[in-house]
Length: 200
Image (cartoon, rainbow, N blue to C red):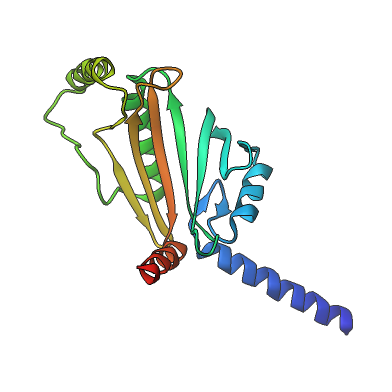
């Protein structure tokens, strides 16, 4: 009798944890929830390595190596509300090509983006890539700051959002830039924003 009661209790607890996980946006299959250290440890179990003692990790993501993951957490509660992954693109012109590949994959998983930016079918892609290459050269010659890739897509889910965009960093080691994907958990981001408002 006691064994059956213990088993029923364990199953109830397991079901509760599973239900909680399903209510949160995930990153690499890990629910974006809980304390920062716990979330970081779960990513380390997925093969990521921490950089120093920070909340930044390096690892493989979606088949790309040396990706940098920044854990987004509330300073007030230390609870995680998001994760941002930067995929390095050493050849600047690859950013557009790989962006389109990732956009297709994300659309297959999450449906059509609710906010595609600068998707202009009237312009030939070849012309765009050529102009983009010249723009990169001009920017590198003029200043050492980053500028935003002119495309982005936002995917809303019932658990949060996923944003795909990119940025050029002329000063990076390889001279290219990044494709950036940001995962935000709806529930924990709401709590995070409220804690900011409470401080104001």
